[in-house]
Every structure is written in C-alpha cells, then in structure tokens.
Length: 336
Ligand code: BYC
Image 1 (cartoon, rainbow, N blue to C red):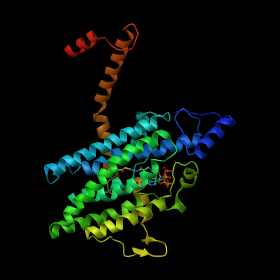
Image 2 (image 1 turned 180 degrees about the vertical axis):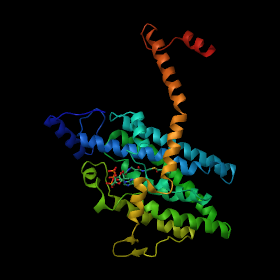
Image 3 (image 1 turned 45 degrees about the vertical axis):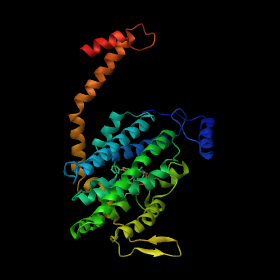
Image 4 (image 1 turned 90 degrees about the vertical axis):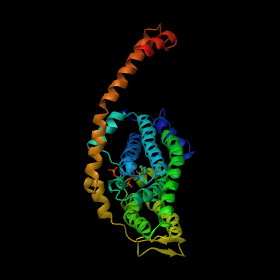
C-alpha cells in the first residue's frame, strides 16, 4: 500500500482547495493518509457487500417461479458481481490490490453490509430485497455519486442506474404478490416484517454513535449523515407500502406534520452490532461460501495470469515496436 511522508504544506493546501471547490480528488493527487485509509475501508466494504450480496438472491435462481423471473434475477445477480468489480478497481487506484482486499475480507478484517447476513426464506424475500435493500442502497449511493474521490463517484453513477432497475424489479414482485391470493399477500407481508428493520439499520449507527461521519463529512466523502439518509428512506418507502396495501411493522410509525417527516420506532442496535460482529443468522455461511468460491477459482486466476504473461513475453519478443502480436502470431495461437 502507498504510504505518504509528511506532506509539503502546498500539497495539503491543494487538497483542501479541491475539496472546497467541490472538485474531485484523483489517484494522482496527494491526499492525507487517513483520507486514503477511509476511502479504502469504505470502497472495499462496499465492494465486498456487492459480492457477498449475490448469495441471498443467488439462493433463489433455481427456484424463481417462472423463466422470466429467473432470467431477470440472474441478470440482477450478475449486475452485483459487476458492481463489485468496478468498486475493487476503484479501490485499487488507492494502492491496494484486489488479492489483499479479498484476504482482508476472508479473515474478518474488513466488513460487508450487515443486511446480507439474513436468510431469504421465501420468494417474497427477493421482492423485499429489491424494494427495500436496493431502495436503501440507492438512497445512500445517489449521495455517493457526488463523493469527493473521483473513481468512486464515477463508479457510483453507473451503479445507481442499475440499482434503480433492481429496485423496480423488487417492487414489481411485491405488486404481483399483493394483487395475488391471500397466501401470496401473507408472504409479502411476512417478507416486509423481516426485512424492514434490517433495511433501516443498513444506513449505519445513529449519528451520535457513528465514528466516521464527522470526518467523512469534512472530507466530503459523505454528504449526508446516516440518520438523514435513513429518514429519507422511511419518508420515501412508507407511501410505497401503503400503495401495496402492506403494514410497516412499527407501531410508532406516524406522520409528523411539524417536522414534515415520519417519526419511527427505535431500531434494535444490539441486534445490529451482533450481526456486524459476525454473530448474525448467516455470517458464517456467507464467508464460508465466499472463501470456497475464491479457492475453487484459483485455477482460473492462475490460467489468466499465465496467459497474460505469455502475451507479454510474445509482445516483448516482437521487436517491441508497438507491443502488439502480429496477425501470424494470432493465427498460431488460434490453431493451438
Ligand atoms: N453493516 O462510523 P460509521 C447493495 C460499521 S450493496 C456493517 O457510521 P461509515 C446490494 C462501519 O463500517 C451496497 N457495518 O461508518 C448488493 C464502522 O465500522 P469500522 C452497500 C456497518 O463508514 C447486492 C462502524 O459501523 N452499500 O446495494 O461512516 C444485492 C461505524 O459506522 C454498517 C454500501 O456499502 C452496516 N450496515 O458509514 C442487493 C455504501 N454500517 O469500519 C443490494 C457505502 C456501519 O470503523 N458505505 N457499519 O470497523 C457507506 O456509505 C458507509 O460506509 C456506511 C457507514 C453508511 C455504510
């Protein structure tokens, strides 16, 4: 990982000026070590969440109720893999390798979102994840399209476009179920009951307990706090639940005319911290599957590296004029 010595003061001044002018910090720019560490932590955690987040939904690909649903779910899960790749690439611009990031995840030294440690028990959970989890993710990520680190902000623009399709596919599953039989309506309500509170907790601890918010706001990494984003999500989602004819599982939920927002009940933060510490219902299973997939894929990484090395050697042995292999080389390769 890159380390930076004591900065010359004009580097520091330029960093502050870029932030003040709402310009992006780019990989070539000097940045404080702590800014770099925070960006690596957050982008890595985000990338890991996208990758681990494939598991709860992947679990339903073989059981999706129709060919159309299966095709849509497969496309969504593939999108999550793609998001992970853009984000790992963004993290790599900060001087850490993808291998290191994977090791940090596999050994529990980096986190992924708490939300992916809950099980997907019924098809309605796939609707609830799209509607609520992707809905919460977009609320947070729209803010991140304006975050101060350039490669992260740019990755977010594309990710948000795809997430908004994900959110709509989830909501459409919920619409279908709530217009269906009594049993389907009950399934939709049960999924909302189980995913509501974990979705609210996904935004992170209350501002008063958030270790990073103050500094991250000063660096314009975060532009809104955990509580502000959570409130935005509640205000947006309650009318959607009304439209579906579903009941939010919160007796304290009430519209507050004065504030112009919904008031809502207390989140179970003990449960959240248990999950973050590794004791949620599916933490062990999620990491074990991830490590297994990494180990099973070792031969692919080795083959790709060997192929790249061979290409490099060929190009070097080709007069070094333009670094490309000749048409003749390519023909030989194809025949082999
Ligand atoms: N889960 O000071 P705070 C998706 C940790 S995936 C676990 O507020 P910060 C999708 C936090 O790391 C999209 N840990 O932190 C994929 C910190 O601990 P450390 C996921 C959490 O960073 C597949 C401590 O609590 N989105 O959409 O300022 C299928 C104190 O927190 C959580 C992102 O990753 C949590 N929920 O703010 C479907 C967004 N919350 O690191 C959908 C990017 C907090 O000091 N990340 N912690 O040990 C962020 O925006 C911020 O990192 C957070 C937390 C708002 C999450």
